[in-house]
Image (tube, rainbow, N blue to C red; front, side, top):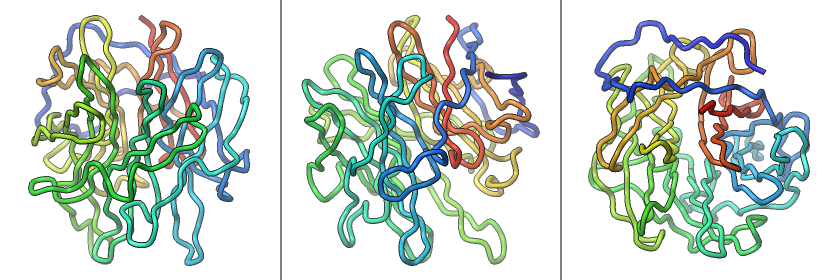
Length: 341
C-alpha cells in the first residue's frame, strides 16, 4: 500500500500548458502486484516486467509485459510474457510458459526485441501492436510498430507480416514505437512516439534519444495516416522525452497518461527520471497538459521511490485502474493504482 505521495519535481522549467479541468485526480496505490525475479518466465527470463498492459476477461485480467534475457554476446533481448491475475490483483492464476510472439528474423525491425506490446479486442480477435527494436552501430537502437493477431484469446499471436505497420518517415526519422490503439467511434486511433534527435550526454558516453508523442488514425487498424505533429507540449525543456501514452474516456473528457523525463542523466538521478504526466481533450485533437492534476507520484522508501514509468490505464467492472513500473524501469515488476472517483 502507498505511503505519502511526493508529487513535486525539483527545478521544473520550460513551457507547460498546465490548466486543468478543475479536479485533481486521486489514485490509491494498491502496491506492487508482480515481481518477475520470483518466477521463471518463458525464454529463460528472470528479471524485468516492463510496460504492463492488460486484457480484461470475465473472471480475471491478463497483463502482458516485456521481459529480458541475455544473448550469447551478453546483450539484452526483449520478449513478451503475460501473467493472469484475479480481479483483486491478489492471486496469480497463470504465467505464460510458451512463446507469446516470436521475434523477427535476421535484419527485421524486431530482430532484437519487442518492447512494449499493446493489445485490444477487434471483433473476435485480439490485435497486438508491437514495438519491435533492433540494434544500430552509431546509436543504440531503432524501432518501428508491428501488428500481430491472436485467435486464441491472447495466448499466442501471429504476425501479419515481417515488416511494420508504422515506421519512420520524412519528419519522423527514427524510433517510432510505444503504440496505444483504441477504437473511438468508427476509427482506430493510435498514439505513439517518434524520435526527434540524439543528444551527446558527455565525453565517452553513448548518445541519448529524445522523443515526442504523436497521433495517427486508421479505418481498419492496419493502414495508418499520421497526423504529422507532436501533440503534447513540453514541460521540462525542449529535449523532454515523452513515452508510452495511454488514453481513456470518462466524465466527458478524453484523458491521456504518459511518462516523461529529462533526456540525459536519468538512469541514476531520480530528480531527472520518469514521472507520470497527464493531458485531457474534448475532441482528440487539442490536448491540454495538466500534470498538476495527475494525482500520483513517487513514494519515499518504496519500490517506486525514484521513478514512475510506463503507465497503462484501463477500465474493469466500472472502475479505472493504472498499471505502472517503478524503480529501475521495471526490473523488479509492476504495480497498480485505482482511481477514486
